[in-house]
Length: 256
Image 1 (cartoon, one colour):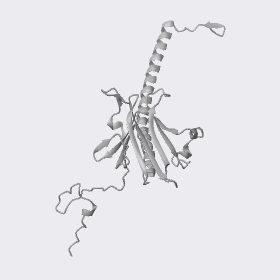
Image 2 (tube, helix red, strand yellow; image 1 turned 30 degrees about the vertical axis):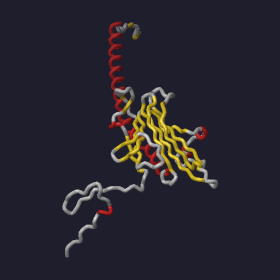
Image 3 (cartoon, one colour; image 1 turned 180 degrees about the vertical axis):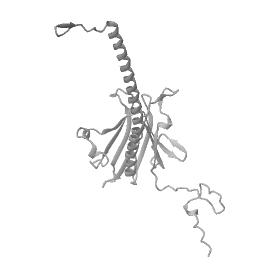
Image 4 (cartoon, helix red, strand yellow; image 1 turned 135 degrees about the vertical axis):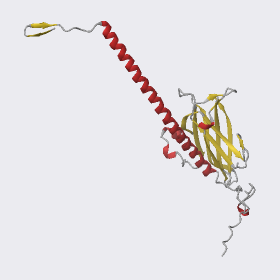
């Protein structure tokens, strides 16, 4: 009620039906807005996942390559590779070891680096955690010591990344891939595959990831191997794989 000039006026109110209609319309608009926001958020997460996942894989593969490059350069070096499954996820273990003989001609471990993946029981999302450990005479770990926090220095295995759905290490032998290596001789190369993509269940009951979602890197170990090259002969025919640098002739001299 509003009084003006000694006159009273009553403004008509809203009926219950009008209020319910307004609430329904507002709820429909809010639902549509939240749906659009949810789809946009999921699309953004998918795009960021596609971008960040290969970058993280590349960083982990680079750390493994640096360890291989540092340890395998020594004469008394060995490598052990094992592959298996943990709760259905493909996981691998890589052991790099350098040894030497002391004054009493006893073999001692100079460096031992272990890369290992295990099931992540602490996370709500199923996946693997990739760990790295370092042991040896040198107390300083040149690769990760500066990045480790104080409490991590008391634990041999340092978690590198989690949420991994595929981790496999294989030995390259020509076109063949070997999933186990323990011989004293060094392999010609090591292929490491990593992925964070959602897995699918195979007919064997294990989990796998599409090949397009796997990030792989082949790292040369035996640098003394003989590399074959395919070259073209003067007649225009392509050389075979048995052609090497020694077979390559110097280019013909121009006629004067």
